[in-house]
Length: 438
Image: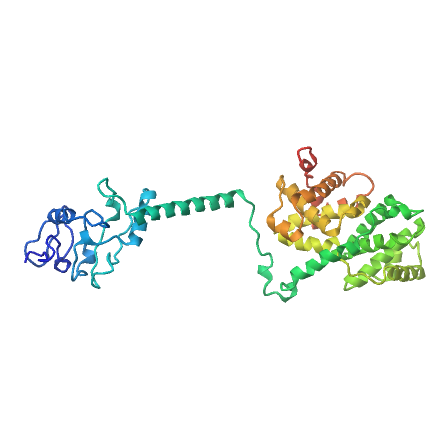
């Protein structure tokens, strides 16, 4: 025997191959055995075999890695191309720059005996004019082209689109204080009930002895008092909410306006603070303009007028949620609170609900720091306000920022010009938001 099979002339039995290719030539060297047929003769026999409708006409390459795996070889010219291999060929033709596809060691035909295998060099496969590409190969190519086109569209959407929405509560799943199971329901309730905390934006028209300017002076002073007493942020926002809700239904003479402010802060401290300032301290900061009895009497009047309803959402609760959605750092947080505290003084900002004020403050702060309009999909989903819905409020906030250090009401500007608050007041305002182009 010369190493070929009697039933399949021209095909070398793999079990007779030993060793590998010589470094300088293309013939196999035999470790044991007789003379071997030249590889070129084998190739001619394979190529010259009768064509099969699904056969691939190319050279069959036998390597050392498959030596001994063909116990009963079958003429490769009569073996149909598998779908997996056809898909590899289609990918190879579409991407010629790819490195050489490694041949598949799986059996080419599902009908031959177990253990038979042949290696086909995918790089050398080229469709010829004499034999058309099989129909399933054409279908595979069309399918691969469609997949590539869809992938390109998705990539372009990722590049051109906004940042995808993210789960902002994923990091707090194990924190019981974050109540991630109920947080969405809680803020849905806040959004539903925030209208109860709002007042008529023209309520000053029913006041006969005070005006909106006096209100601004009172709140500017209370912000300084809040800062000196080192009270919680929630206390300030609740204090101002109590003042507006009380003045919206109760007429007050101007000499009692400061008493209303001091009393509202006392009530807010009792609701929010752990350590509450004593009445004597509040009398002292009022330059002893009122006595203890007057403070306690006003406390009764305010709490009964508001029907003991102190549990209403203020801009602060929305600020915390929206800052989390914006992935804020300390700089953005401080600038956002600086902007919204400027709005607490302005009577005209009462026409905006608390959630809109909070969202607009964060949007304005982001634009101020980045130098361009910035409002992500995540912020929009949690705030439930689009960029266009925030623009009117944001433009007013920029104008307040521009004049914050001027005039008589500079309490917020001085507070946020300290190192404790990161010198946020010294940030250049986002004047581009009030240009005609926006």
